[in-house]
Length: 451
Figure 1 (cartoon, rainbow, N blue to C red):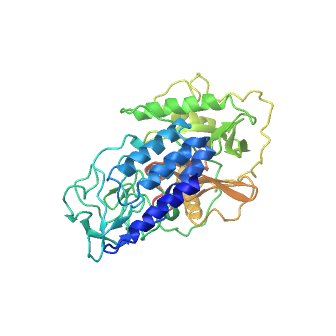
Figure 2 (figure 1 turned 30 degrees about the vertical axis):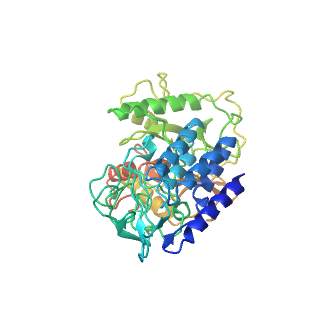
Figure 3 (figure 1 turned 90 degrees about the vertical axis):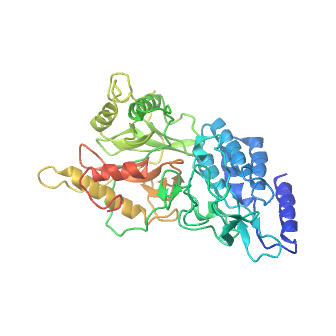
């Protein structure tokens, strides 16, 4: 049924393209949601995935109205939330809603026209501020129907000025999309939460910097749990971190998990690969713990010291220690004697020795910068050793069976190395770019995330 639907819609698109008086920019529309449908099936969506996928990619044809693509994306987000807030489905939906739509010229005109923007807010907050890119071959000065820039529908909802540069969008903040190309094949970053060229989003990573990398003190983080949409998110972040730590204390290596899920199991960082937790031990004396973010809603999971985790949670205003129970140490999983039968990581190399006088904070910042510079040179095919962790693109990567397994950090987060705050060392976690930059700058290190 999937193939028949795609062939049928492709036939319609081809028929329109053959109209004699129009120049048209078209695309292989089913490709826009193929990866989303695969993620949906992997998340357990079953027969619900394909109908939503077909409805969504059909909105990329020239005929649908300006808000139908966004409405379809809302349906995709709704299903992702029903399937445990599946972060991969949400990320792919955020990219889909920015995919350029097919367009054509007026009769006997030399260029295709830009497609009007939806002029209403999306249902789901995950889509706020996102709008479609335009294809590079579309006339940036004339929209469908002959509308000039500045008139109704030519400026994205919520904005008061034309898009700069013309044709760009948060996922492609520097340029329009090549004719017929799929955003999902060009970028894995939906651009949410950045500030690129006047668009909402646009946190495209800068070019890799050359630097000598220092080894980390393991680990990583999942997408944050939701916090109330009110002020004072720091306290809620602390409580969310406590709740996660209390949940992690109930897990063991045989606990059920969904692919890509992250947790702490028996004090080790755990990632679900193929339906089973793969654990990596934190190097002594570090423990795995959930921590609150400091400048936006959410949490991260990382290897850190017990005192560091307790201090960060206490700084949020949350009381009761790491788990909220009044104790700092997360209780051992039940049964405590059952070690996780997973691929152990080699013990991370010690952090760069702190300078005389104990000024390890600055060194930690520099070490984090060096790691981030190293990660910028890696890709999914880079060689790795079992248990090794890194950042690949914006996702967290763990080496399993000699190959990096990359897990998305979620819509608004990016993977980064961060400095520890109360002893020499670093951690790897999912956080916001602003949070990573702030933590590194707080050590006295200059030059941003990568130095």
